[in-house]
Length: 505
Image (tube, rainbow, N blue to C red):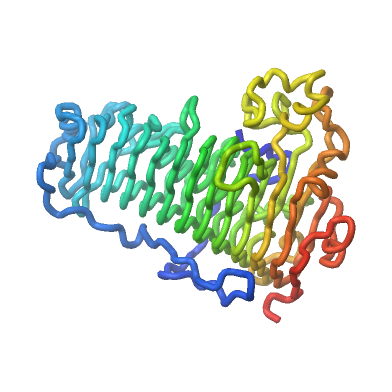
């Protein structure tokens, strides 16, 4: 799964973290009319985690850090709906790599101040099993070595878990997985080898996910894009087939790759009031997915590492900080909106802006579909997306993910090239596709997809403010436009928008 890098020339490179100041509110400048006027709060969770109860709550089972495996043993011997209180100190599991805590339905785990569950770089998983409605609060979980694409907390993606006021750090794989109705609030997801969270459940969509008020930072320490170029398997959070997610009030920063990445048949997202900054790659990727609202976010200093490397390679693709790849609004997929609406965001000193992209060769059953085995949410019988049935509607339309019904308005785009440290190709806005060539039986060869995404699929910029040396790309990477051309026929974009060529002028 993930974006096929050969189509847009990006490769995540793990570099040292950028130095970031920690303040209680964002330092975004005053906004013009039509853009946000209230600073977005920064969730400083990692620097000041909430303390747990200093004494055992009434009825709770105390857990002794001096007894190896005490937590797993007491969980096994207790009935469902038990509350466990982990005393201060470092708790350990048995030395077997598969030793883990397997909660029962409704169990709760509360850490006292200073309570740590440490995998000692030996245990793969901290909490697993199928039990639902488990709660983990005030606990630090670290030192576990989950394999690639697997997670340490809620390893088996059970439903209804609440992970709150926890610190999940310095683990391999993902800090945590996600099940349906999961609540991830006020957590520090820091320094994990692959993801802070991998929202994926085998064989089922993850419904009703809340990710709120977390600090998600410095993840992908194992540099998976270097180890497996083009894997599309890194970032702060990765979402797969999530139906209904609220991602709000998070501080997503300094991740060694993408900040937030929704990949393959996600639907009905609200991404709002977040601060996304200083991530090596894009702040946000929304890929082969549907129906989202992206609003009131502060997005700054993202994509400097990957964008610069792309430019140095001579890649002509408008590599962005907000990237919609084969994603759009679809009224036939039920959601709280029937479009993708991007509005009232501040984008400041990122490597480029927003790119709307369709890969003409990527569709259901195509070998170029990197989400192997996946088809669109509009086609139940995947085998029908083949010759000869794919050449006519409804399958001609429904067998491909479309970047359509995207409404980008009332945003503020600021670029100071001297701050970003670039001279070319770092201030682009784009809507485009490649020339279709593959596979031999593709009904989308040539320019039809590029023409559709550019002119026919209701993708619209309007009423935005641009400050700095912005240029615009339409139809294909070879066509770069100035602001007047972008606003003129046939593209007619950014009605009611303004551009001031110098960000500081």
